[in-house]
Amino acid sequence: MKKRAYTCGLDAAIDVMGGKWKVLVLWSLDDGPLRFGELRRSLPGISERVLTLQLREMEAAGLVHREVYREVPPKVEYSMTELGRSLLTALIPLGEWGEANMKHIEAIPG
Image (cartoon, rainbow, N blue to C red):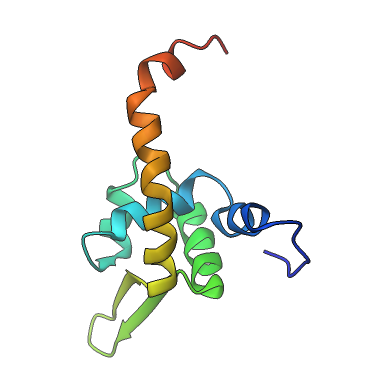
């Protein structure tokens, strides 16, 4: 994500969210911290590479915190920051809209 001037708040929010995986990562972290493998299993269809890139971008944006525990074997957990939680809270109405309109959306030819 490049630093740039935004035209409005929605422009900035969409830039931070950057596609479907970041929102789904936040959704998965809503119940608490997860290790990489647990997070990947909670997101069917995501590759290890894409998840790694998304987590790095989210950490840089301040949405996710990465905690490394100094033990053998090394343990790494990802959790949502307050900024990430505030974004997820803003997205809940959008998820509710999607849920209410899913049948219609699924029927759209494409």
